[in-house]
Image (tube, rainbow, N blue to C red):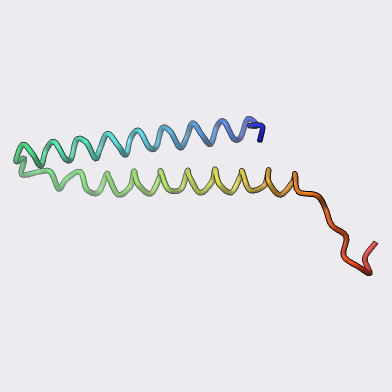
Length: 81
């Protein structure tokens, strides 16, 4: 499947959101290992980043589905012209 401009934009959004989420998880894990008392402060930011990542993935999948639907051959139903 060829990528259009929207595909590339949505892929970049997903990669960026994933990078942010992963960096927050790594930072949170490091804070826990170091025994930082405020490690829970990152949990809200992690939840928001996970939601943004999931939303970006849903948008990309929905967009790719439109490509798949547009490439499927059209079938005629009996009785319709």
